[in-house]
Length: 207
Figure 1: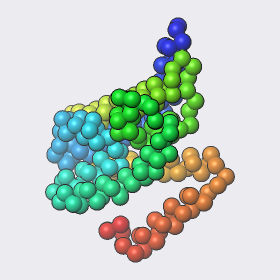
Figure 2: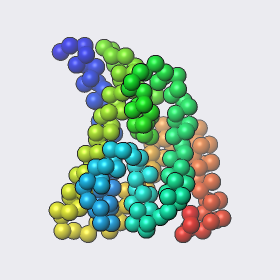
Figure 3: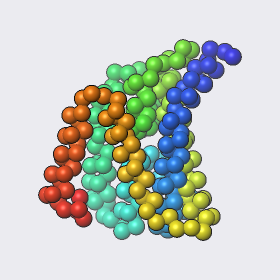
């Protein structure tokens, strides 16, 4: 096996946890979208051109309720504001990526960000090549899961009530993993505290 093939194999292995998560999360999104009256083409288009797990889940209700463009814009900004900080932190590592750079910026999801900032570059490829391949593979997993969910939603004669909880479950899992992997729990407490304050101020319906 050539060094290049070994590097590609290692990159794929690095993304396997994302593969398993994105397939199931994507299925949840695809089913939910189908339940609201939007088929596989909508699911494919949204996962290809939006590529934002939480943003797409939120978009389902916005579309179903015919929300205004202003509401969609503000909600999307609030839900995905964390990506502003992601982008700032990878400015240096993405510099000089050439024609791949716009796509790498577009495809910088939570899970992709985690891989490109923590995993070492496999021997046999450059850092830019690794980041691009991770982004591409993760994007492919997400599209596959979303489309598969729409197909399953149309094919299976069962109720999918409550499937939207899959996104909440993902963030609980992420919080648990971060809590166990670090001794500094201040960010978690700040997040939970801010959540509690906002819930008290705005109420559960608006929150």
